[in-house]
Image (cartoon, rainbow, N blue to C red; front, side):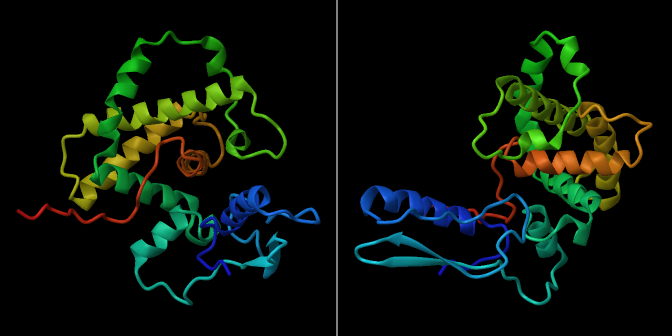
Length: 238
């Protein structure tokens, strides 16, 4: 039985086991696959999947489970950022603010200096500026190979976002540990992200659109891999 918090990859793990099992163990009938998706709540009931015929081996996929209450606010924000709870519960804008706070306090955008410098050297393509950015470009499509132009465009948008965050943080002269000054920086970064994502100032709910697209890039891995928990520093013993 595979048990865990929502949207952690339980069904994807089962499908990987399916694939490995199909190569190592013969099966008489075609094996069904677990349904997966980018949002929590895709698996709504316990389902059994046969992964081997001789011997008969079954694996159970279960809906995601969470503790009844989450008293720690930061833990709740981490779960929301990872997609373990629906965005509407916390709010896309608040989740995006938390992600920016994490990136800034860790000074992650400063590691994107090379991306920023390389982007400045690249010739600008005017046709790209006129193209509409669509969140659906990042979501997996079954049995459909991604169009090369779409992949390159999304990668370009990710670079623009990284450059925007690098520029705003590198120009910031305040104290990142001061909540008020950090809030001022995040406000400037929202403006920079709106420009990088090419969202019009006249668009209704522009801030919400920035938050959704920024979170989609993060969750799709386009900004790089991240560990939200603080990793303890282990020093070698002499």
